[in-house]
Length: 278
Ligand code: CA
Image (cartoon, rainbow, N blue to C red; front, side):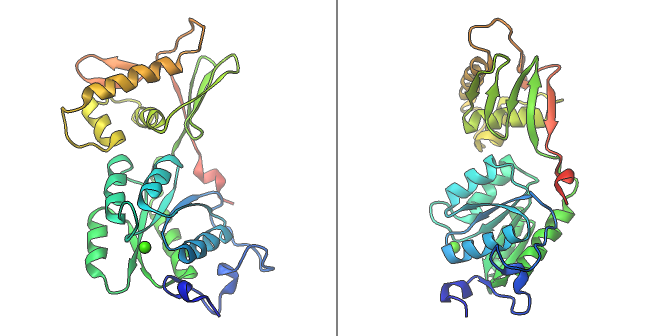
């Protein structure tokens, strides 16, 4: 007996209740890749709940969003390893979320959730860069198999940047925090975190203002708002300087006529996903 709304999305496997069961079930917990983080963007609460429960039961760390805007923000800010993305969503539909996400996170695995029979949606989603799709209604077992397969196919994805550090000062990008030598802490905005993450991810390259606009802001209109980039960088540099101290680190280097890059001698620490597998 499953609730009616549940049947429109994720369905019970029948014979394999141990995978879809609630935490606290007496069956042994299956943990294929502990602590891999999956963002679930789905507006229908029963389906979202079912997907989250199945993911968490399988040992994943699940983050949920009930509309497109929240989903895009969650996927961008949470160090996600994979996104499960419904297409018909309030505020911003799944296609727009996928297109925006591809500009800032070109290699982040995305599986779209499509309705039965909507071949056009699947093709459009795959063309926009989705890695795979699951057709509703789907079973927990099928959804988990797709997630595992896509994560297996993407082993070469560079591990997400955890933090950057220099001179005893650490910028924790997963927490959007600057920790100064004297113990003080400053909080970075989402945009500031993404600027530093992009520069650190491409640490050996000069990044043009246009590229920052396209990759961090998601703006493709070139030569329009490059001054906004400069203003953000100036504000960000001020925030990274320890208050009341002259011990300044050049976190962001200006390359005249070309753009910006991560400063020299800054240690970049990536999250080692492989060590999290159990
Ligand atoms: Ca929907």
